[in-house]
Image (cartoon, rainbow, N blue to C red):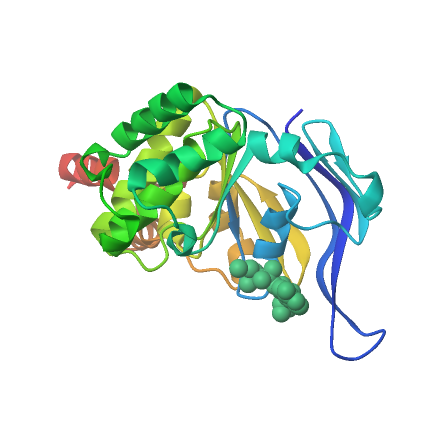
Length: 284
Ligand SMILES: Nc1ncnc2c1ncn2[C@@H]1O[C@H](COP(=O)(O)OP(=O)(O)O)[C@@H](O)[C@H]1O
Ligand SMILES: [Mg+2]
């Protein structure tokens, strides 16, 4: 189950007749419904947002098939399955999701999707309150979503997706525009949910430090093509990251430097920043 792409292409029309902007070329991949934390990276315009929007049928392929939990999405729009089944299982947190808040109170906003997917009032309220607790914002429940700070609004918008308990959660640059503390808080929340409930997260980001810290798998797009799908360590070990206009995470830069200067042989896959510092205290 989960999501699979078979030879997926996406072309956008342009102002000129018969001229298209190809945003995805021949994409093949599988996302498991459990246990993955996938980072999608690549430079601006490489097709990342278009790719992730196919994962819950916000976009329809112009050729090929996207299979979402057995619902086959093809270019023949009128033959496609009911999208509600897809949307319920795959939640999408847009870029700047706070622009979509609209209810009078935070609680009502977070209850909106569960009610829309058929939960009873009591059930939706219970689920919304649990989600607010998970995000440490129970205290905001009776406030207007428009009187909150940027970071709080972002959390409320994310709560609105988590509240109906989708199996896979898609995130388009979820930390963009937040201060470092806000970024860390939100990433830790996603990571804890991923660890505790084994849910799959698929996240677009430009931040290689986040990729190194959280991702279990990295998908790289370059010029509308999938150029890498695999291990994060291998990505930064080989020249692949450079050929795809990516930078190295800080920890890897530090490891490279130490290995060269001190003639050490530290492996990328054994350390995060904290454990690397511990190791250095021991050996130096
Ligand atoms: N709604 C749209 N209409 C026309 N072209 C688009 C649209 N959205 C994206 N594109 C084009 O598709 C390509 C990929 O865009 P996008 O998926 O947004 O990439 P990324 O998220 O990696 O920046 C770009 O060339 C972009 O100009
Ligand atoms: Mg984008």
